[in-house]
Length: 234
Image 1 (cartoon, helix red, strand yellow):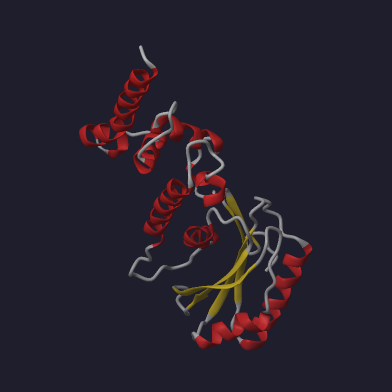
Image 2 (cartoon, rainbow, N blue to C red; image 1 turned 90 degrees about the vertical axis):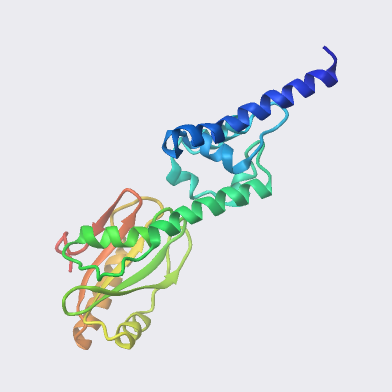
């Protein structure tokens, strides 16, 4: 077989391999597809010697077959994978962002906070998969319904700076009856640092003086949380 015919045969075979996920989705529904097959549909094509599904498998293998880890990758990270150029990387990032936004849709009814677990569920939409620290406040009314959730500051991988005056200006501006503090630890470390404890006490004292109590301070990680309330520290 000539090289030209070989390449043509390979191209046709690849085309069928890459088209199978689309056919599978149509015949069996989207739930029947693997993560790699869904990625193959997004990127549309592979390389000379890899089908789109092969490339999708490479991508999933690079993140331990964990979609949450995939969501953390940037365009630059994705382009390091063989078969993924900038355009395909952007398509993957955009698709994952759409999925995140679907989960971010706020329900029209008020969300009542009755326990730290409620805070954790509420904050997943804002802090899940973040590679840097962010500090947020949750503002509540007298019935402990969430009225607003506001980002106060953004930091680096290991910390963020928070101004206590900014926290309570926001609380007063939005007529909050109480406040819950939340910040994430991208490292997954659940235990608060000395600085975390100091800040908690400062904000708690300011809240006491302003009659806007601080109900809790939560350290958020992708796998769980630490509650100052549960630990008896607030």
